[in-house]
Amino acid sequence: MAAKTENSVTIDAPLERVWTFTNDVEAWPEYFDEYSAVEVLRRDGDTIDFRLTTRPDDQGQAWSWVSRRTADPATRTVRAHRLETGPFEYMRLRWFYTESGGRTTMRWVQEFELRDDAPFDDAAMVERLDTGSRKNMAHIKKILESAS
Image (tube, rainbow, N blue to C red; front, side):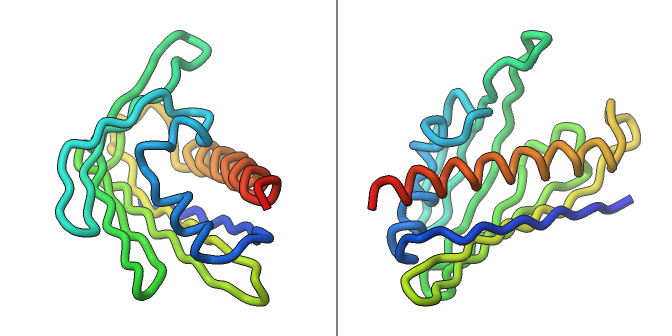
């Protein structure tokens, strides 16, 4: 069964700075708490294939997967999906950026369907994704606003 999460944050920073900061994939381990490493596998224009590795969880397990991310500077949107799907039939992400009065609203939409043999259900994954998104967005907001 398909599921979806949607989260947003408004940052007191210009769109260009938020866009540049959040699309610097190699720097993600610095401001996304759950990632320990990013390995860029391929670049083609505004598209990047990369491997993300998480920090170990409470049981000492680290997770890794490959994603493809395409940024569209003209529309200030990003589309991404997992190439290595893990427990998902699919995982698609879209990021939207809008500016108003020198402030930027960043919205993340994640759509997924779990495989039948996934070790958790949709509700648990939605909660995990929502919690992580809100935490990461708050952290990005703090970094960008304190740098002003």
